Amino acid sequence: NALVRVFRAHGGETWRRAKVVSAQVEDGRVQGILTEDGRRAEAPWVIAAVDPRVALAMLPAGSVRKVYRKRVGRLRDGIGGLAAYLRVDPELDLSPRRGANTFWYGGTETGQAVFDESWMPDGLPPVFVTASSTRETRWRGPQAVIVLRAMEGARFAEYADSFTGERSEAYERFKQEIGDRLVASAVKAWPELQGRILSA
Image 1 (tube, rainbow, N blue to C red):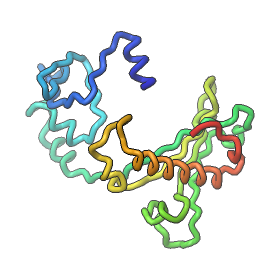
Image 2: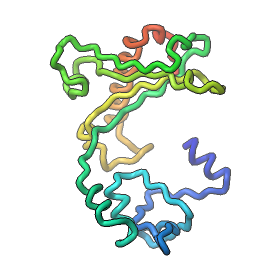
Image 3: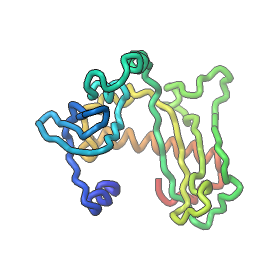
Image 4: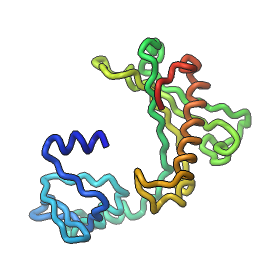
């Protein structure tokens, strides 16, 4: 929503649920996109934040080399990522964490896979924690900590046909539960965060 507000303030237009079916390419350069309902948006650049195979399917034949299409077609799906963004007390001194990345693994089983799905129901998940606000020398916003965790997309399969802002209470509960576990793991990794998280 914040991005859309800024985009519109600069004269941009947004279309929701407009399925893009092709990118228009002429003389080797992208000219815009075409939607399923026949609308065309002209643009000198197109950013496709989708699976690379989906993006290539939108390009006309001959716009990329065949060998590249084949290589992308052979790619395996990766594991998905979840993120929690934490705004922390501005008085908390995070300077000892400057430039540090922490991978916290709370398991006792030496053979436990770090991204094993069995972690979610009964234990705290392994997480990657970093203080993004300490990396920028000119950072002027609130102090920020990012918590990352991998998770198979299948865990969200039942919500695949829902949309942001219109999802069920069950989805919101599931999201909250995962978020709470990510935050709890982050506090285990960085105990100084205890009681100093303003929002997550």
